[in-house]
Image (cartoon, rainbow, N blue to C red; front, side, top):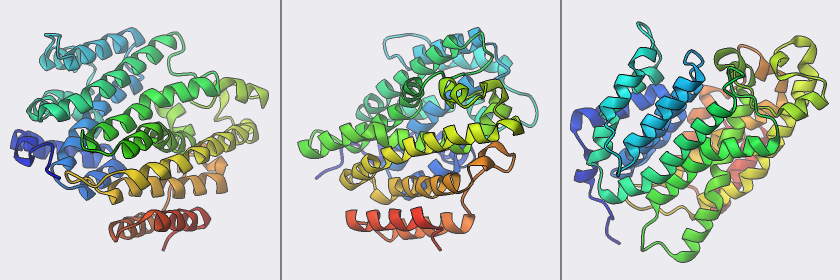
Length: 352
């Protein structure tokens, strides 16, 4: 089967593309590992697609930007991605410039400040790649704008119910699952494969997002003033969202963390099925997507073993040694049975 997009075309402006591959290393180490394991042209297509989604995510998480300004910025960014709109990338960078921190800023804000570099690489991608990325990316942006506006009076997101949590996860991660699916399939993809991938792309994204929500409960509240644990479930435990880091509320928060961890675990079976069907074409590899899946399994194991630590500054994470072992094992190659066995092993204890 021939490639559906040419690797030379996918390269884009060389300096801008090289910068994109560099900045993703600092923006998301986990996603950077995936991009490193992919081959060209898929590596660059996924890189630019991810960065295009990370830019609005950074704006949405910015507690120093008033909600009405966040919504306006997200709407401008969406207009930039709209092929029928004349809004330019320069219009977005000009609008966001006043909100970009001065001096020693994070990689996320370096990315936002250099949005036009990402857009140049995106514009240089083949049409099929642009059409694969644009709809889910725009849905993500629209969803984030909706949630910021919904909680504009609260100073941060305050998820009310588990149903709303799933809605948020759809916009934040389910859309990315569909973006990936759009890129790894084409008109020659067997109907059965396409059907399974389209049905499981959402839970693949939700599984990873829910694990992140579990492990980052304290950090999300302290650093971004966001609370994703459902308010109704916390209230049932006698806890208000504004007091989730109060030591007296630890047991109640832990109960909801455990419920959210179980929620994530329910998505893992379908996420595994996604991996069993994902095609290896145009530089795509099963290993690239098995790695974040297996790291999520390990992180979930640690969350369930010590859920109270998600509230503490040190948080919950797996060791560098285990991360390296997961990468090495995935790169060696995994069929469906081996993936299931490795998942079970990691769920029981750290992979050495």
